[in-house]
Image (cartoon, rainbow, N blue to C red; front, side):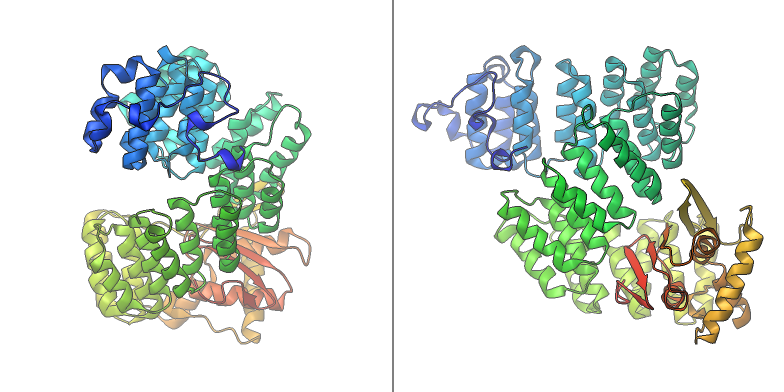
Length: 599
């Protein structure tokens, strides 16, 4: 999309070819201009004139812009719904209006997805859904009944199956309306077994999404752009770089039939960034002829997770020079970049500019980023003060950022207070128990550690085991501590034993404070030795040539001991090791880490 026209109202788009209409001069507008409230505008939009005349609708649109109520998502979403009324045959204007909505939320996306379906454009509905995913406006249970119907009406089997994967992954498979729509969709396709699968709530995951794609290839079924973007998202989550490269090569080969638009290009750069190839992500970003705000956001987010705070902030200003206006998601990206590099003053300036310069009201996520930034930098009192003075109710994620900072800086007193609060707010979140246990263990308060474990048992809370994945030869291998089911486990253990012995000769001393059990030191050292990331790295060593880069993805935060050990491994063995944990990317090279021990 042409950046210069991204933010103009639909009736100012000169290249628009259908249903041109002009606003009358302000003085000729009827008395509706005297009604300033949001409720009054919504009442007007639900009135007969708005649903029967484009001219009346344009007048209400002008009023919403003049009073500032257009920024309200209920107003802009309802306005969009009116423009998309099938009787007007005006879907193009509705889509152009959507491009002007600042930081559209899931309600606005859902309205347009349904509008596309109602106007006989099911493929457009599916494509807008993926744009929703790119915008980080999380879909909800109201998104999927419409979307599954669109897949059924459009006869797009592969896309329908990918949407089903998303439904299960996001936890909506049990919703009656979603289930009914999915069963109906598979009924349209004549796929009784899959309809039964939807009925039985069987699990799908990213690995299964890749399997669906591989099956399509073996059966010579051409995947469309939606399937490709879904597969790239699965590759990004799994760290499956080889699969992602294959998709990129496929798109290049099929460039005559598959257009690299903003959505597909953004999915591709996001995959490369999350698979540790920031250089390739940047190359894709630079080569994209079409960019949207979510494309810039994805690149900023990629730079942030790799610790490139200065570059992320510079890109933030560059997007404005290119006439793209930042939105709330953009600020989450740059604030996270500052948090992971210790750039507190930069973060404070950016946060203040949200309202003062960009007229964006900070949401709870933005406050959470700032709390995280202050906390990681050791400014715990300021972080707590910010939490207590927030104009909106702090959510568990905000308190979680403060608790994480207490673990980093060993503040057991504040950590206990925040941790106990979180256990009441999120009694089923195993991560909160683990973090509080970690704080107690570092303070050698073993009775408190035992109490937390007892509480977990009483509440039936299961711990989320650490797992690490490594992709080799097109296959994703997963390792968990204490599991010995891999066919090369004996060789892996042997390699790991030699590796640890060599590290100890270089001065490595296991950091036993990371073990949350009151056991003997020797037992603690043994427990640390078999952490999942060490197992994955050992497997990488026996499966690759000397000097090759090892890439590992972990589902949890890398512990201090593994972080220190991997730094030493990179120096002793002359290997670059790229590790993505739950927090960020770590590039280990020559005994140092790109995070500068700040994570």
